[in-house]
Image 1 (tube, rainbow, N blue to C red):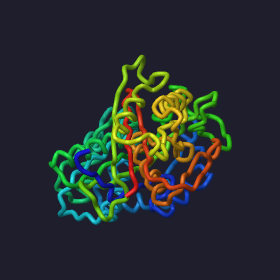
Image 2: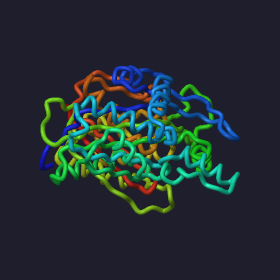
Image 3: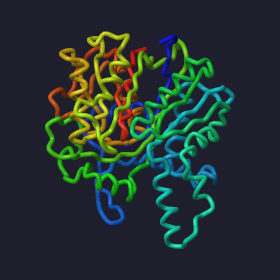
Amino acid sequence: MNSKIAITSIASISPLGNNANAIWENIQSDQHFFKEIDFDSQSAFGAPLDAISKQEIETLKKSDSKYKSLDNSVLFAILASRKAIEMAGWKSEDSFGINIGSSRGATQLFEKHYDTFLKTGKAQTLASPTTTLGNISSWVAHDLQSQGPEISHSITCSTALHAVLNGVAWLRSGMADKFLVGGSEAPITDFTVAQMKALKIYANENEAFPCRAMDFDKKKNTLILGEGAAVCCLEKGEKQKALAYIDGFGFATEILEHNISISAEADCFQKSMKMALQNTRLEDVDVIVMHAPGTKTGDLTEWKAIQKVFGENLPLLTTNKWKIGHTFGASGMLSIEMAILMMQHNQFVGVPFTEVKSEVKSIRKVLVNAVGFGGNAVSILLSKA
């Protein structure tokens, strides 16, 4: 890379909480955060925000009359962004860009407005402006009173890591010195859960660990939805306050046989990982935070891709989806958060039902993977500051 890109802060709101101490404590535990939730005509597992975070969202919603009409995906992003720029020391008068994406966007609000339309034949006044995807970064910019560019996008489940790619590109081009990037998702809704069930990938058994993400021998799909947002502050050059640096990045797509397919050895992941690692020795990578959504095919193909790329130099492997579920467009940034915390504490946190549970070691480089429908893989290589 031509210049270093520093991550100077990271903030999130998720089932793990919304402050670094609580999040790290919850990441280390063997507890998952799934609950059985009653939907319109069914019940299913989901990983909702913790009680404190829910209350903070309610307080945020009441703080401005305009916020009452916003979807949770927007409110989650606003709260996480406030925390991130405060930690980074950014001010509203600073020039910084914003790129916060989402796979689904204002899902809950769209379902609500559409239900009203079916019942009355009329759409409510704010139905369109509050359900557009650009809604997220626009409202974050409004809340932060920022002056830079605003970008929102959906690249399915690799959305947050694509936001990182965009931020890096803007910084390296010289068009910006700071960028706020990440993803937000509030998918625990009737229709979204029904869609995942229709694909026959949703967990349906109440076991000790209902989501078996990174269990490569599982015989059934165990994906569960979670909600949350995560964002980080990117700055160009070496920074005293840096939490980590982006050492490499890779991206790839693959030709699909059908809408949700991925090749047997995840060709897209092989390409994205090789690109991210082109200036790094394989043996220097300490940990990979896998995408591993909890599906039979998704987990196994990524595992095969890692074996293809690393051979006998396998790093330690982990994921957070067995604990908080799949947060779609926010998931990649939540994985980056886990990676940074492991580097800060020099402690690997594994998956309790896999062979490697936990290990204390010097963790200096972590590779983070994400992929979504469409075979759009991204790999980000992080190094300890």
